[in-house]
Image (cartoon, rainbow, N blue to C red; front, side, top):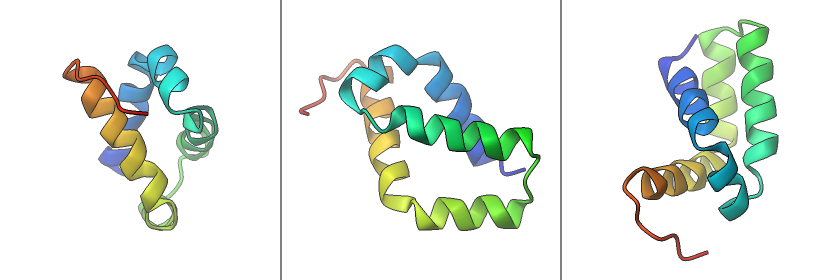
Length: 75
């Protein structure tokens, strides 16, 4: 499984409550990531999912980075 998806899941889990309040699609993304992890999806399937949802993942990572660096998000 892709390290990127596992790292993303860990970061989301760690900051879930704050992230959910500033970026509502977090719950949906986390559910899909959990589904991919629990089904032990192939790297190809994970990569395809990441490419299809690139804009959502980018926004999520942006907000995570700001939370981790304690930078106010302008949402």
